[in-house]
Amino acid sequence: AQGSSPSRKVFALALCTFPAMEKVLPVVGGVIGIWAASKVIPIAYQWDMIPGVASDAYKEKAKSIKYNHYSNGIVYSAYDSGEPITEMPPECAGKMLLKQKGGGWKLQSEM
Image (tube, rainbow, N blue to C red):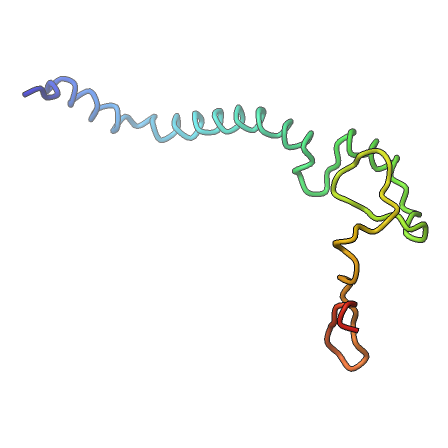
């Protein structure tokens, strides 16, 4: 049977009890953390994943959005095809939730 040699066990035990390890390991962990953050933070910035921080690409896109289409019959969709959809898709007709005067909600198709 193969086993660890006694000298290897003594070395591992000596390494674990080395007094400077309590100071060295936190520094090593901090260096690894800083390295990981240097890789993750730029990607999170470009993907607009940091709350309260907008990337330059987000700011440029926000300048091109026209928020005054609410009265022009523009239907906002999840896909930006370049041309806005100006007619309601048939599968959406009658699906608007309407608040009732006495409380509660009803679909437009139920009215």
